Image (cartoon, rainbow, N blue to C red; front, side):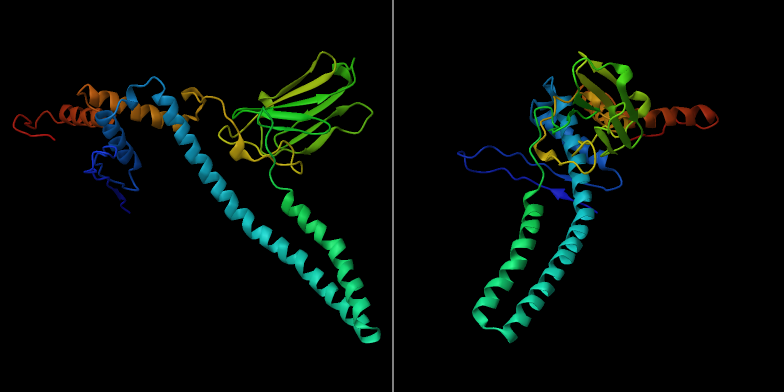
Length: 307
């Protein structure tokens, strides 16, 4: 599949000058397309000379991945929501028909229409309105939620849960179980404060908890997938709108190994080209050629031409 992008230069002097860019996207080699984009940026702008160029590219890569995940989630959730709407609407219509038709035959029309139509409307409609209104909420300053019994905040790597407890509470009075997909926290002899399935899996060996000032249980959960924002801490709790999350300034070291190596390779190739040196792919080809020549000394390469 080929995608050709082309921007033509505007002739009018009042408009900003647009430079032509032509590139073909080969789905089997997307890095080739990105390298041409970086070449064009290096030749026509000072973007890559900025100290923050690597961070801005990392942010763009992360944003693109998050959009793909959200798109996949919507495709899974939409059919489920449609089925739920059908199941809730059908019984309401049947009840309304049965309750309104029978009284009309025995009594006068006016009183039966008023009473029968009012009853199902008062009982069923608020439930549907609550479902529509109970959408994602705005996250707190820590990109989490403040709930009745606890609050939680997050960054891409970790989730921190804070649970207020009576002053003087000691560690030996706390019950805290952190599993891959579940969290249970409370005080001995009392019902758990939190006991439910986590929104996403964590790394139990990298999680821990402690008592702060003998009045706050603080739990640090290390995310297994460190490229995703959690919508809630425990499933069933109100979900936040992840589109309104305000992430910290991204660093190259915060990226997963695959994304980081891709960005580093592109930046290395760009610097090599600016200095007139071979790119990583070209260096690899040269090594292969040298190895081949050393393994076949009987062959004469003096008149050979290499591209």
